[in-house]
Image (cartoon, rainbow, N blue to C red):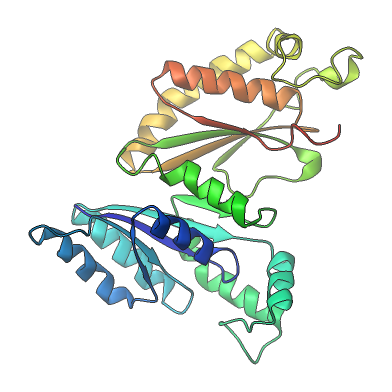
Length: 285
């Protein structure tokens, strides 16, 4: 069996940085290989003493996205492990990146840069929908992107189970783009309006107790448990490699943080090992 990671996404969103990470960690990295030839790489793995068992394939927008999806499904049916990493970014960020490097966009040298980016985005939609994990690199530097890829892939290449992440965020700072499911926690009482709790976060015991001991928190968490009884086995049965659950409140410092920590604790009790990220906890209230 060959372990594949397909690195794809928008031009300028960080495919090269992600590929460098895999190469640095011993993966066999291929760039710009015709889609029809990718399965041939896996055939090398069945040869005696073949060193090829983990392959990272960089797939740009020059290839047909629907053909790439069909190829991925055929590899999975053949018994190979295939995960798709899609790198995305806001159009205004991509424009700034291209303008700073003075590079031409590969999707439309004769078009306005903004139009070329949107055309590529439309072409890649089907592949984005098929991705196991999407990373929005709009607000990430090179080192932060490598850290995100590291957290997702370095220690998990030999683990076939579904990987989970629990994220907290603040709606005032924008919805996270790279999550699967969002739960709104703004119906819970807000510690921001309690003077002694305001400077603390949902990681501090007084705030956690204030949120979790509220009248609605317990029933909400119990309903989530029942929902997870249905969703988690179903996602695993469908072969989903990554699941990211996001919990939001107004500022991302109190309610969402406390709820994310509690949900992660309950997932651990189920035998999972979720990563926890508090996106906005350090931002001003």
